[in-house]
Length: 266
Ligand SMILES: [Zn+2]
Image (cartoon, rainbow, N blue to C red; front, side, top):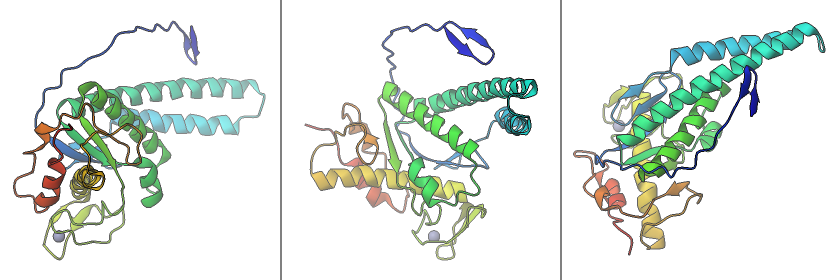
């Protein structure tokens, strides 16, 4: 039995080995988690922020404020705390629901997913814009992406976030901008695109570079264990399918190719 703010729940553990047969699509993707959109991928596709969740989160904030205004030990404070706790539960359920659905769909339709290392990102990027509430949603989402990726046996890579929003994904030129600038505009090559789309493209390239770089430095076949410094893992090492994933016409095709060559271990 578990006690939650809105009652008691019976919890059952069902011990079933979940196994999912991943349909390899040949699709690789970089994603940029943001405030304007929940995420934008390297193809320019966006997933919206769930409005229902935003509303619940705002209500939670109001209820939290109300608790702090009530006198300690008072009956009113107790009531306010209970309300806050219920809303907290609602938010976390909605957040989980959204994270599970979005992550599941993303993993099922891709063979490789690159995203930014959130812990590092919070230090690198201007954090004033990003609310702690978004951080909670993002990290839950990333956890579920990792979970599903393991079930599907696909590759994920968390990349260092430095310059992913600044660099031009087409020519590599560094275009300084603040997070509030929503358009990436490169004076060198003339590229104009949504800044999150530009960032997502950089994240994908960086992810592939990380994979390729690891391969060339240790000279070994591409088996990695969970939890190494790049938060990188490859399951069972069957990566024949990764070759031939070089995006046609990508100006950084060479770095993508080097990442794709790591082939199969043994
Ligand atoms: Zn450029």
